[in-house]
Image 1: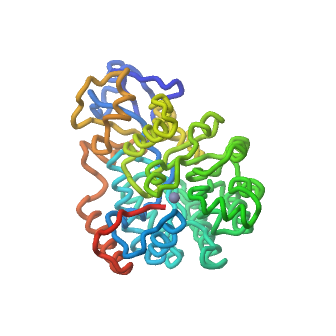
Image 2: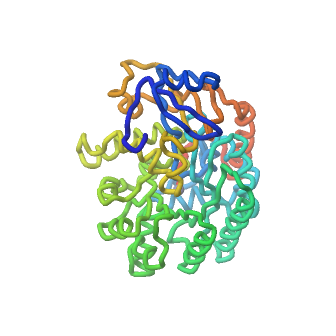
Image 3: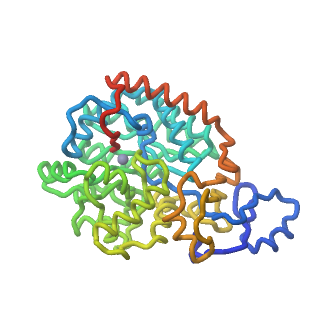
Length: 443
Ligand SMILES: [Zn+2]
């Protein structure tokens, strides 16, 4: 994943002080850096750490949960009956526990950077400190925010914004932080124009990206048509929100003119194919967006944390939608999961590819069972069709190993699991359910 998308065999990567300094034939670099520590990656795939462009770490606590609710029949009901009650039940401790287990899962499966939005009206103040503490314990990069929403009241919206401002101020004082602030707005149908303008102003002040759920279900579109006489992206554009540092999550229900506005303003999009399938909201027009030059990254939306599964889902979903076996190229999927994700958050000069000068966020993949030869011509096909997160052998962030030989170095898996399970059990109990009945759903 360099500028020319070269696939190099028998090469080595020299790393110094957390950055990639040279990529050359292995034999040449071994002579040049004869005293360096060597990680042997022979027979393996070496690629940039994966960037998950849209996530909700706290979604982890709902895995396998059953909620005693009337089954939702559309996406708005999924939010109202599942997610919003969960949000209300979340505590500051739950935020920490979920961020810990989710970051551990990301790290083990090769994700070195993610963008997260937390939601919890009863656990706003200080929550980003708890999430940051968990992410720092694991050692990967996190772009974190609590969503601003006026779902219950204007005051709730202000408190969410204030927590993001507080955290942005705190991080400003730290020279090197792997956890960075972003601003998040829940969705256009739970906020006023004023709140969107306020977040736009503050994000510019702190030079931080903004993310907002956009046209995920049809409720978003109907709300804006009924209340503003505009389609969702049209309203966001007219308020002045759109721009190169804004990431619209989902963008499922767009028309041609909205795609045109996103392209014109160089706004980014995070595509979440598995969540979209789970929530039955439809298929985002990713091919049309890519054709218009829109930068599209790949997210999990808090659902399946193995990004190789998400890559495979994106690869398959657009083939089905267009009934075209050539709908989307495997290389494009890899770009969405790496360099495009980095570009969405203004980090493309630092991460997202393996090139001299960039930070050494690198993963080494050693498939447990490789049925066919691995070489320059087969590697992309293997990454999309063969590899799972469990095949990730080594993970480096800033050149520092987080995982080696499939074993975590920065955290105790048993401890992470017990912390998460204890928090989940209590959360489920507060939600009034312990028996698995329906699949967990993410927003
Ligand atoms: Zn989401």
